[in-house]
Length: 424
Image (tube, rainbow, N blue to C red; front, side, top):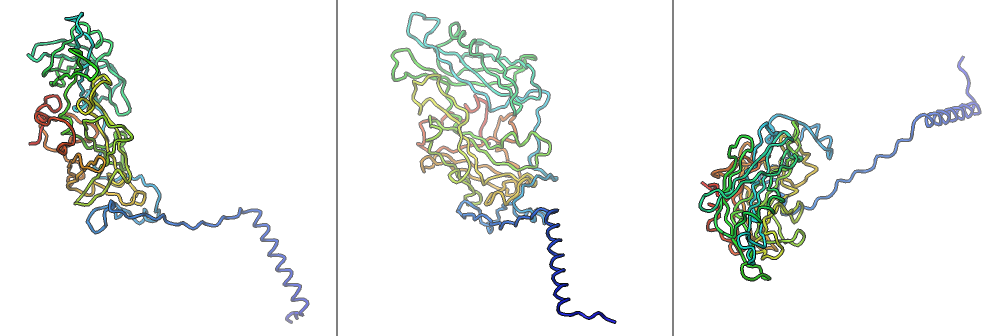
């Protein structure tokens, strides 16, 4: 016989069920923490500018490289290695390599002349420096022989050596103490074209040979023969370089992407904050980057007389370095494109690129470089080039007429201290 349920019994059963559920919920709460609500993710808005290459131009911005797995992890950083990296690791060898364009020669002026100690006559001796690329942090002596304009030997000196830095570079330079001593013993007051040879101090082999042109000028506050001497570096204005930061090539699995750098020289003593420089970069006629909207303008090396009493527009050369946030190398999948919207990856977009540098809105420099079908920077057909570090290439630079006071007449023959370099 089936049990008969009265209204009162049904009420009691209902109360019992509610009570049981309540007890179960309390027990569950004690064992499991409360799960917070998932916040609503709002994709940040991006402002479209003329700097971002439109999708219809055929410019690859890297977004099509994402696999289904990568697309499911939008916004997360990727670090995956796959075959076909364009720029592999760069490791120093067991023999030091002199970095061909790191050589710097300057004239160190002295306020007296040892041949005429009682006369107010200035003199000078050369001061040299350069970098080598090497695997070992050991003493590796270098010497320099200096020659007079007639080709006769002037003097020789052993250079001081610095320790290897993070880029496996060791710097060599004239010993300042010895330079001061030489100024009192063998300095000259002559001008003209002088020569030098950098030699391996162990084997005696010549590793670099060049020449440099010395001039002089009378500072505004000086009189008579109390002049300043300088090495003419006007040739530097016609050459720059394109490269990448060395830190990207120190590991075997360098699948990570990186930015492009371009440097140029200016014959002005521009300040680091009020320089007025902007670098724009173009591909297929489209502007793909500008330092005015992301990137950097930085100072590099410089050549100047060793005195504050000079005319900057005539006797001061400074290197400036440009970098863009939107011009990168992917290097076989190193970047998540979502993290760098509007970027162009030059290793996936071969062809010619143009860099235009403006000073206070006026064009003062232009350079072109080319990326090959293999994604690598193409080294222009320059004669006489030697070892360059970390995939760097030399660029010919066009200087806007009247942008600076300089003499282009012999710049190419004097380039890189008389080594025969120029466009074929």
